[in-house]
Length: 68
Image (cartoon, rainbow, N blue to C red; front, side, top):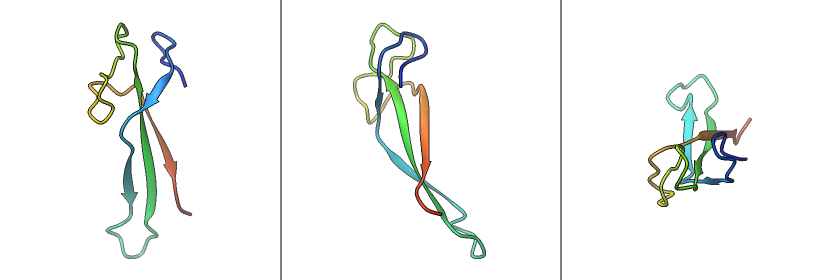
């Protein structure tokens, strides 16, 4: 996946999980992994800093459902 501004290869930042319906007893809980995609080109307007765990800008977040 490439940055739409500069074409630089995006890097994955700190991955995190989210859940849907975990507080609803009558619905199955859905688990998702979220991959924030960060541009590493310091000359780009989408630059997210070198600290991938605390980026200043996320270009896109890729979300994948884990169950069901």
